[in-house]
Image (cartoon, rainbow over all chains, first blue to last red; front, top):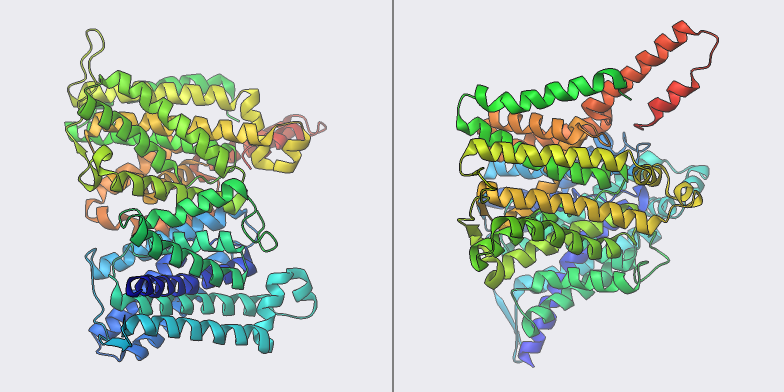
Length: 288
Length: 338
């Protein structure tokens, strides 16, 4: 019972981190139809920012999270203004290559400053929570609570506020949105800022129970891509459900199948599903 | 297009330069670096077929190169198979795996194809890293034998290996030029220029794309097999997507969708990183922004730019000579490297 509960907890932790990263990716895809390969690098920069703020400046964990979110949001907006916006009329191949260039630059830049070695963010809440005979590390509970809290706030923002609905409108129909007077520039700046902030928050949440290193974004971004392909590119509920599916598949796969191959599970799932359904699981959102 | 009259002499001069290069190289290290650049160029020429001519961004290319290298490594070191037998098997195995990967991934279009191949490449990397009973895992394979001699020729020093690699480079380029100038090559380019139109013209999209994919993975496998025999040490990191990104940089700098672009880019960027030794680990600080600036301001690459200028000049002179005649013909030529 306890072991099973641990796997559920693991799955929820992984799933909520993946979902936050995938949400940012899917929002940007919905608006600009760019697969932002640099999104994993933004996640990585977020972790380093938190590490720097906590480790070198002695900031409080939550302040560091806000700081990291702010810096990465700015970085994401800059990448839109300086690169993606200027390439909006270029062939899709160019967007993808530019995103790869940005990814390489950010990784090499961070490595030049902090080196290639692993870093650790000291766990702000090392306590263990006990409920009856079930044990859970506090940090995992915080990850789950914070991630779902943030998703709920994002949901309210997108559906209940005028600014939020401009993003949805733009994702649904670009020309239609422009016709009713929605400013495309403002929406894309906003979307990139949100996506960057989500990546930074996800990284800061996950950092205390994980390692920080320059290529830490690779696996996460690839899994996020798997998630949004499965969930439908541009679909917000798809990203959340997909994130949880991959999170659970990994935690149970690692326990019941093999720890060694746990990272392959997500990709094997992708290959399997796309072999039978090239249009993804939720074809309405997908544009395969 | 280059004018046919001086194309052949130019190629002959380039080949002669490549042949006498070792005599002018200051030491063996330079010959070694140049050979590595050639091997990367063979892989990049293969990637250019699917990326530049067929318009599909395959991000698993380094994975297929690693499959070729590991086939040679495993067969020669663990099973005592002669190098050249392993060499042939490496190319075939990469192509066979490429066939199945292509069959699956080419059902997806555009972005989806690229994302999927990114995942395929990472799967290849993870499998190589984790399956240590077969692949030696993270340790990699060391002491891979150098290519065995053919008849009286031995390949036991840098010089002879340089000529071996050069030979395969020339064969690869010749073969690629036959492919892209054939009807099949036209079909690839038609797909790049517009899948719907290509299909309307009666091109079987899936079959043609899979064929391009298989050919390009065959090139990758061959390059990997040469790499294994030349460097004689391989590790799982060679399957990482960052090596595919290197090759994309070669192609973009030299000229995407041109025959010699990948070679030019591979040579230029290899020497650039060599001359900036201190940058070795941080070369991506330069390459990253370089990629971005290239796609923004110079997407046709060096050879593409040069060709465009040639075509423009040819168009202008033709206009001078026959003011009355239309210049549509030459404008069509300009369109070929779009």
